[in-house]
Length: 256
Length: 256
DNA sequence: ATATGTGAAGAGGTTCACAGCG
DNA sequence: CGCTGTGAACCTCTTCACATAT
Image 1 (cartoon, rainbow over the protein chains, first blue to last red):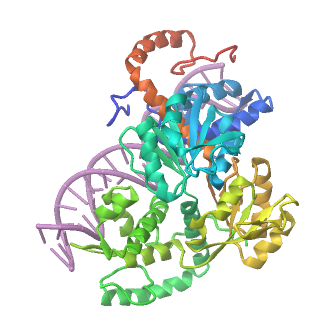
Image 2 (cartoon, rainbow over the protein chains, first blue to last red; image 1 turned 90 degrees about the vertical axis):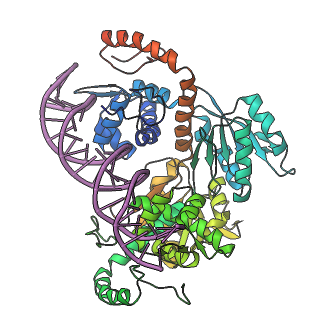
Image 3 (cartoon, rainbow over the protein chains, first blue to last red; image 1 turned 180 degrees about the vertical axis):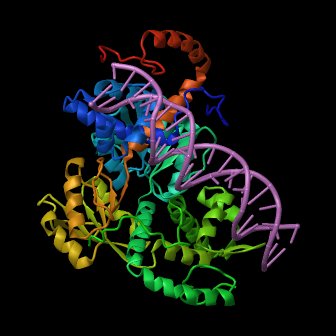
């Protein structure tokens, strides 16, 4: 079944769905918490609740990794922690560089969650010469000039970009040229990268805008009936102007 | 509050897919950049490239909003900026509170992208009495005791949690009780909220773990042929032990 | 008796490819 | 002709429901 592979020559049988990969860290966190409380086994129901997903989804996710549970009992916590860690590649050490040590870069450098899971901040890099040498989170900031050397000497393959938007693409290109193949981008810009380089973006303002959309919708529902009526008027407007937007023209002058 | 909302009865015709909503801010950013360069119109192809998506997807997305383009020409930039802003609810002002003014909270408070798009930081809140009164990004930090009062007086419906994981759930409950119905969570915890409250989470460590997974996979492909061979051995192991994990037992002692 | 593992059905999202309009 | 708007095909992810194992 499902061998429909478009890309890769495919390490077949090993195709873990992207959506599942994105949830594994969640399960891992929940399992780690259980492990620290010395809980020996956990059911899909309990673990799913702790991870904030439903149990059918969790079981399906785990089924892609293998049959790690025991019917009638549940999952062995320690065993699962190890298997998921291995699957995610967290049993090895990942040196990471953070570029752009402003407020956000400093926050990232100080973030404990990095170090605790196989990630090691190999270097902090900033373009400001004033910053050079200053320690942030106990690590001295280095100047951008050193970027290529740092990547190379530390065997860094994962880079974090926390620069202003304007500098991000250029930094990205230097990282990639120096050998980085995975990038976590906090700058509010689309990064262009060659094939084979992974980019994930975290965008604060986008998340807020999505919330605003739903928030607006909630408010709108209270007057849902009124909207119903407005629609009749809308139909009339549409008849006059071929543009069929649901409602609301621009405030002032509008397009041809 | 407590508009015991189960799930939309669906304001039919207005059902914009979630995936589309998530991309609207992206389009909006690209359009804003074009607008600043006084570009009057743009084709789906050009805009898609700027937003980092493919053009078919973009056209489909816009089709949910209405027919805002002109065949043979493209889209009017200003008009689209307005329509998307309105759809996202950015034509109104959203007061936001940020709770937890550590490195991350400070970074968020200083982030220009907030103010520029209808969001206004109404208050910064921290549990540390030492912080009270200190200005961050020009806004004086207030103590957690004031939380309910601040939410109420400013009509805040969106809250940002940037506290340590341990404090997040409690802060969340206070925000919700005070009337907040949308939460952006930066703490590495699953938040439990009642129906009707939206939560979005941003998790730095999860993003890195997903990158690590793909990074590991890249490295693995170089030795894909070797893996092929290993599989034969694996098949033998599976025969002995009903656990059918793809490979790699735990380092030391293992489960029953 | 209980909880996993999984085919099968369903929902949602993406891509194709072209009709239709300016 | 050029570019939008969109049905239809396709693919991915989620949910259901139950056979299966301990």
